[in-house]
Amino acid sequence: MTETTGTTGATENVFDVVVIGAGPVGENVADGVVKGGLSVAVVESELVGGECSYWACMPTKALLRDAAALRAVRSLPGARAAVTGELDTAAVLARRDAFASHWHDDGQVAWLDHAGISLVRGVGRISAARTVEVTDADGRTTVLRARHAVVVATGSSARIPQIPGLADAAPWTSREAAAAQTVPGRLAIVGGGVVGTEMATAYAALGAQVTLIARDGLLPTVESFASDLVAETLKAQGVALHLLTEPVSVRRDEAGTVRLTLADGTTLEADEVLVATGRTPNTGTVGLDQVGLTPGDWLHVDDSLRVLGSDGTPVAGGWLYAAGDVNHRAPLTHQGKYQARALGETIVARANGTPVDTAPWGRHAATADERAVPQVIFSDPEIATVGHTAASAEAAGIRVRAVEHDLGAVAGAALHADGYTGRAGMIVDEDRKVLVGFTVVGPDVAELLHAATIAVAAEVPIDRLWHAVPAYPTLSEVWLRLLETYGRRA
Image 1 (cartoon, rainbow, N blue to C red):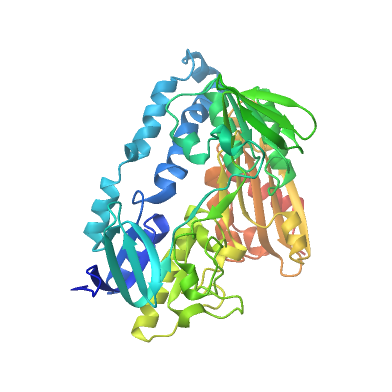
Image 2 (cartoon, one colour):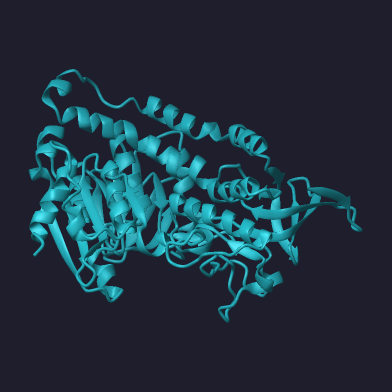
């Protein structure tokens, strides 16, 4: 890094790479760049560590874990006899606070310093070619110039739909739900995706009376056998489901009660309303207008994650990149970090004049974004999925066969919990005879997912999967049952 004073009086610093956004994606890009011998600065306007560390992955899973453990204990008679009482809500929230580092980023900042990554606090805006102007909370300006690349890794924020009265009703978003210090007596959730479903699971377990409203149904993008089982469980836990309808008006009265009117005429009351209806890109203040793009839009990228213009070619000569949620390829933390690792190496390669390999599954490609995206939904029961569903495979024009099996009939499941209920399914590309999708639903199925992810990413032939013998008696025996249902090779 070199430092100078510009003609405006602002401090100017020169780095090889400037990254806007110090969430997990920006951190991983910066780490890869430094390991490749380049200098880097990251710009952050909030907490270093981003959404996942403080308002998403970590605190929400901490909210869910105690209840999941209690359910597991209660599914075994000997363990059940040793348990008395209900969840200690204060202890659950305190553990959640610890996993969110009490909303302090000292540890993450220390990691940046140890890794040799410079941190600049403030709002970063592209002001010229390879130039980012950072304005801090006191209005001071720092100008960062990049020799090789600028990376936008600013993530996304909760989208508030244009429902009359909703914005004025002080709705919760995922942030408020993840960080709440008390549990509302009545919680209405608008949206039936992952956030809405997980928070319905968490808050119902913590004692709230939960109502979930989902215009497109519950978890509409997963296999129906999985979403149907979760819906049944939520209803059994007292969650009121209003599916295939939506609010048409929302009002918080003088007493603080939120009143919702649905399209089917139903009226509901709640103490808080959580909106979980999708995300919007954090690109409004990034300075996209300086490179001919529209502020507030998602960023489209090529195979090496360079930002593209409307004509499909890299903007500004190819020095601008985007990784993570902001490029809308696969908006999950682990996929963003995967992109970041590839991008860090890509930037280093281009800086050194070495070839970049973005062919499918190449060193600098993020191919898994399209073919092998894994996800765990921490509902009750859990859903783990990777690759295609039957519907998405059909939409992609793949000739497939879908095979399902009762997970509860596997010996390992019966041992795992009394009355174990679950199901697994695999999607086989019939032309290539390889697995292209896998979904499983049931208690504690998350750890089954990586085996499926390897099979999908490696395009393991079905004939070879017969030789991957599952240990007995474990939940993984479901792989053998799925293969048997599919049919022995000729």
